[in-house]
Each structure stands twice: as structure tokens, then as C-alpha cells.
Length: 270
Image (cartoon, rainbow, N blue to C red; front, side):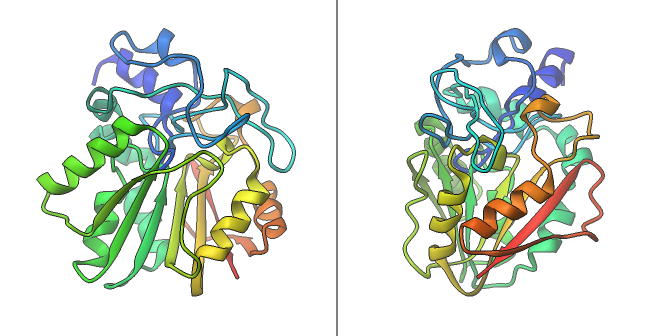
């Protein structure tokens, strides 16, 4: 990967809805060919969220809307960018270099997936986690790959077909609504995306309603000490995510034995 692309990764990691961009410097400044504009995208309306899942150091597809920014407080807003050329962004989001800091195998181990589960990947982006989850839950399971960017959803569907994973359901969703049916999912995974979501407690309530009995929500985001990810002003601490999930009706805690060097994991259950 070029030095240019590595810088870009810091900017745009976002995720399932949000799915694979990063919060660092602006994509325009970091990547020559990347189709990013400093306008809205992401899971948030006036302060939506973004594509989460990261690049070499990035995170979220999104950051706020009309260029806004505001992280802060329970449900603080975030600024976002557009990530319209999924094939181009996939070179960053799915780069092998990401594996070293994202540690996807450790993340999936914490989720305790089993065949037959239904998992929502919020901010799925180009499918970095989606395809891994699809293989873990097997043909009897299902992955709902959610993203706010139409081209990401198109790319997800084509990638799943190419990789013979019919259990991937790529869905275009709105910033403030994951559009998940009540009691329909066993797990929700939100990687490098939570800090992009505008009204996080309200979003947590929607996720809580979508959980089956025994279901859980996992939020993975950047530690303040990590050299990857968005600027520190855009990051949130695990305690804030715990509070926001709690306000959404979930009993939440930090997973202290996740073993991730650059990120924390918070889990919420009904």
C-alpha cells in the first residue's frame, strides 16, 4: 500500500452502515484518487455517524453531515464525508495491513459466534468484517450488512456473490435508523463507527429492540492512545459508550480481556 493510502486509512474507516472509513485527516487531503467529499454521509443526520471499520488507521465512513462535527456528550454528533467509489475505498479498507492493528480474529472471538446466528454489521463498508462473520455463522446463519452509502451496499452484494456467501444481506439504511425488525438479531457489531453516530442513546434503543433474547451489541472503537483512528477530539472513552448503551436500555460493560492493542470493546445486553 502506498504512503498516500496509509494516510487515507486514518481518515475513513467507518463501518457497516458506516463501515469502513476513518476519522483522521480529510480524505481529500490524504488520498489522491479517493472519491471523498466533505459533506454528509454516515449514520447520522445532523450528526450521523459513519462507515466504520477502518483502514490502516482509520475508521468511520462518515463523521457528521453537512460537514458538521461535534462529538461530545451522550449522543454527540460527528462530521462525515462521502465514500462513493467502493471499489477504490476497498483498496484501503480491506488492505492486509489493516489486520495487524484491527485484529479481526480477536474481535470475532469476543462475539462468540456460532452457526445459525443472525448478525447485524452496522457500518459494513466494503465487507471487512461482514465476510468473516458470514463464514463464522455458516449457511444456516445470516449477516445483515448495513450501510448508508449506496455504492457500498452495491459492492457488498457483489462481493458476497463473488465469494459465494448467499447468507449476506446487504441493506441500505438511514443514518438514525438501522431498520432492524424487533427481536431479529443475535449479535450487533459496530466497528470504528460508534463515535460517528449522532443520537447514540436513541440508536442504542433501536438496537436493543432488535435483539433476540440473549442477544448482544458489541461496540469496537479506538483507544485514546492508539496512533490509528480519528483525532483524539473525535474519539470517545469506553465509559461514554457504556453510558450511552445504558441510556438505550442495555446493560453494558467493557470487555477487559479482549486483548486489543489499539481499541476497546464494550458489550451491551438486554
